[in-house]
Image (cartoon, rainbow, N blue to C red; front, side, top):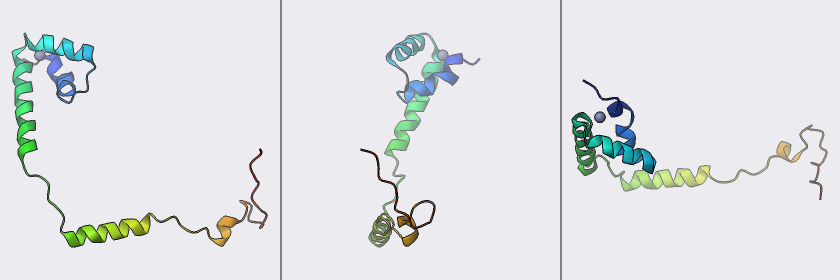
Length: 100
Ligand SMILES: [Zn+2]
């Protein structure tokens, strides 16, 4: 037996994605549906285990410094080259000024 709500609303409820009315509707459903209650409990338990697990590694300081250096280098605003200063037509005409 499979409840329709377990496939559609349960994970949205778990992730806090339901609006207040839909969340209240799902909570009323939980009072009578053992399947959703059990599935929600299992999902909350899994989420809790994953949050407690040490799943992230800290990068070595040398790698972090290298990444920061490369990031700073790539985020610099490029200088306008000779072609970029020309008009789109490439005729060396100045770019039109905006109307005031
Ligand atoms: Zn259900």
